[in-house]
Length: 155
Image 1 (cartoon, rainbow, N blue to C red):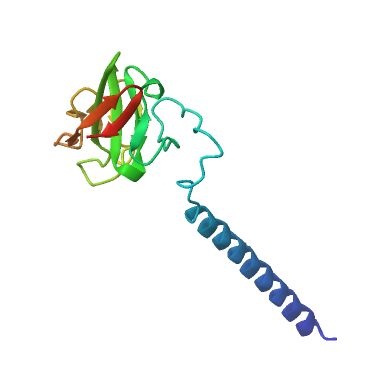
Image 2: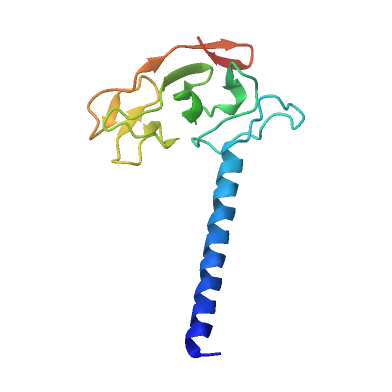
């Protein structure tokens, strides 16, 4: 066997390894995208997220979240529904679009009384969606929510 054959064999092995790793990675991504928890209630409700992080609780098709899951002075982001639910003061719930009005990036967290976009640093009030600091110049659009007992839904 010549040295060329050994090198060629190693290249083919590396190629096969990389292709296999890429296929496994793609399979994992596709499997995660294909998960549907809407028909399986056996796992119970999702654990409450940390304050201000994106949340997608398993509370039913129309219910965004429970009142007890939204921190007072903070909020939760529901990216799949394009909504941020906030609780500026005890028992007062507000909702806004979850897309920054600057360059259409999704907002990333709620912290310190503001809804924050990490793309360019815009901050919006949890009370009325107004711009607290730019570069955004327009407020987040308000959305209507309905509180029914402990359930919060879009109105």
